[in-house]
Every structure is written in C-alpha cells, then in structure tokens.
Amino acid sequence: MNSEEEEPVPIPITGELDLHTFSPRETSRVVEAYLDACRERGIYRVRIIHGKGIGTLRTTVHACLRRIPYVTEFHQGNETNGGWGATIALLRPSEPAK
Image (cartoon, rainbow, N blue to C red; front, side, top):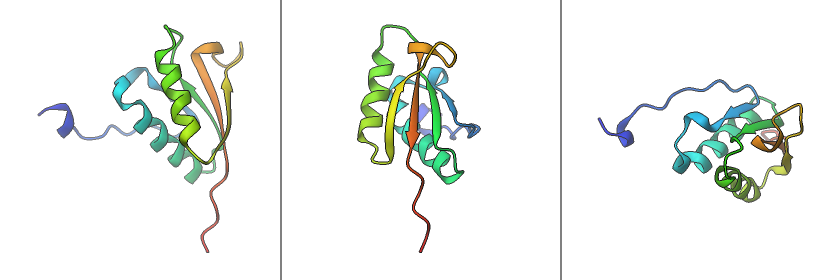
C-alpha cells in the first residue's frame, strides 16, 4: 500500500493543530480541512503549531491562511502560546443554514 492509498488518520478537533506529524506537502490541505472542521464545531480561534525551524512551514501556513476567505486575521504566537513556532488564526463564524 503506498501513501496515496492510506486511510486518513482522524485527528481531534480541539482548536490546536500540530503539523509535526504531517508531510510538508500536505500542509495546505490539512490546514484548510482542520479550519473547516473547527468552524463546524464553533471553534473560531485556532493555534497552528508549525515549529520554529528555518520558517519554511510557517511561510506555507501563512500563505494558506491568506487564501482562506473566512480567516479574519492571523498572527504569530506569543511567549505563552508557542512564540514564532505557532500561528494563531481567527475565523469568521459559518453562515447559518437558511
């Protein structure tokens, strides 16, 4: 079985996404799917942990967040929530079904 055929691994939707367990090429897809799931559960503040490293993953996360229309703002974490190894994203609530 190759990586394209593997079953998705469920991750808890808690408002905190740690990207260390994902392949860098999956980053945008994982971030967007996770943020969608958070909005469905009424979670509008999400901490995305990308690590400090050289900043490549952080750059990818920020580019992804810029493309998602319901992300109202995002910023680097502070000393209590991950510093420059994490990004905090604020989401616009989903529109109620009519």
